[in-house]
Length: 268
Image (tube, rainbow, N blue to C red):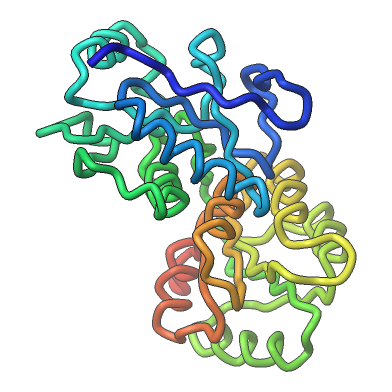
């Protein structure tokens, strides 16, 4: 099997994005190896993604280091040789198809990839990506158990408040993404519970802005809440920088575990 990198043009301008300038609505994928038949199947999965967000764009070998995820055929000698010569790969989300073992931070999947679940695979790979590729949350201020709850539904905010206050969280509410960004610009929070679908600015854009403007030098943890469970939405949330992703209706125990991990103990 010859070494080949599947390249599909960026349908917007025919060029692969440059490194470090990824759009949160585009996930850049580099593929090394695989057969011509598998290339065609993958090409179909990529074209389907153009109707969703994030869309998947395949980058050329010349722009390899700009990829968000790298998919490697572990049975292709030339693909393996290529991977061994890329030191930056250790700090990138990667999927090894057919490998008996891989780096601990990388995923291993069966050799015959199920292209129909490609978004799920990409999401899982991003989850396992090394901390160097994703910003690691810094500790919240020592006195903070303050949680920002962002949802345009008063009923949802009240429900989340009742759950959070049961384990001693101090709740601040915002009824829009814009209000949340404004609140985070002046107040330190231990974490944010952020709805995805809201009028005006959506949760994905709000997440990006919250991550960029956290107070006190900390990286603000963001937990996204949505009634959608599509893998595309999960990938899009991960690309926006969210730390966790919970589906509505929220399970109280799961909420406590996820939020509690970001709160300073009550007796600290």
